[in-house]
Length: 398
Image (cartoon, rainbow, N blue to C red):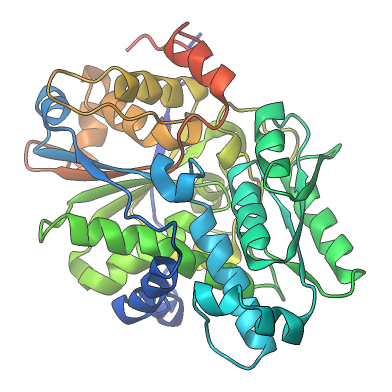
């Protein structure tokens, strides 16, 4: 029997998170964007309009940010890791943030010595940290949870990092990275989740993700989306997107829906319980980048105050989105989107089908809607991508 999508409207009691939203304002994001522009590999990733698909689904517009082009790494995660690492290094010499040219200078390396960045990852974040560390002349040690694909591990090793798959889930890998960093001279945890006592670096990572939001907003050329669907693992990207558009538009911000894998729907469960909740166990899902059971505490505070809907999605939703993007309607551009990247479109397509009329009404999805989607990764697991897009794995019947 096909597993169902679950969607809940946010009814959490409000609290003050203005300081956290403020760290994503346009002034801060321009500073972050300037840092990323200082990399010789920087190019703005495309924002693609899917006009034919919008007409077929019955909305005014669909725009999707294609992060498979980001720094040649096939995913957006490097934005956060590189910015946080630069902030750490800048702090060692009493600066706020440094450009790429300063970061790779021999003089700086001599001054700061060797920094070893530890992290846990389902693949994309670890590859970004490894890539940045290699270019900055520093070390990276990366832990992946049990069940991680060999392709994702090899991508990290190819960047020169020390990397291994552990016997445990993502949150176990996070704890291992923290322990190893604590006993290593010059060791620093660069993790995109936050917990009590560890929020500064995750905050910088969220700001790093703001480059994606700033680019997208500028590429829309004055068109304000009515809806944003953003996927979440620990919720760092979701919090960054929500924070940026809330800071930009205030009460007139787009309606945001946070989309999670049902095996790791910690934010959905937190909203349902009206309080912080976690998910444990193996968290088996094809959406490896979303297989995280403990919400980022910073993001949670932003999301519970400003995000309107939370969706818990089975694997077939992501698979449907991948196939739709990989086989576009005539006139639309093809997007190669991985499992975690395509779930937003899969959910939108499901919502615009006959069985969701009441939810569409609640979400105000209609012919006046302009929906912004984020394809956060390309085919980061190439074999599984072909299993789904070519061979029809994880079929849907809607």
